[in-house]
Length: 288
Image: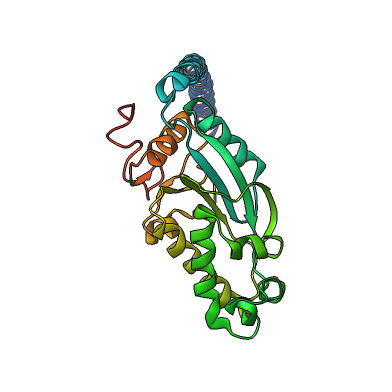
């Protein structure tokens, strides 16, 4: 005959075995469920990745086709837009071969010619300029900072019209230049200021403001340009002086906007927040 305690222990052992078996079964079942879920998730993500890759490849192909189309159409769009126009490319501060090449490429099909490329020193040292301006009122430039604004205005005018003062001071004024200082029909301006000593900043600002005043007084189109990656942007500086501007000169749209602006359109063109439009409303309607 079994003892009651033995029976109770046997029953407890059976119950424990059942509990362990149930737990193991649940654990195994959960592992299978997790494994299946992971597999479905991996398959789904792999499919999404493949779809995204196909979409990306399609978009790249479409962009490449659009860029090829724009390159083919651009010369026809602007052909003869600026026949015989004499254009000056002026760097106010640091020069850029890349921007120079983009401006030349934009103007090549138009019939215009870049006849002057000049880099104005930044900051401008008044002492050598004053020495070069001997026998003029600007000979006192080094000792009389109030002359910086009027001097800048005179330089701005003579950059477009030519003049004796600019001929005298150009070695001191320009860090580099190529071409003849003669009558111009338009100015492409690239402002890229360097680091200026605070003590020289006020005089430099006065010169630049005077320069802008002089350029504007000539009545020829003045267009400030930069690339879409220029940082900080100089578009606000151009806008404050009522110059047209193009903030994406590396794009075909930016090149077109430059041509339109030199043809007389006015505004801030491009794709930065400071732009008012990608292109002037009259784009393509400038034929003589």
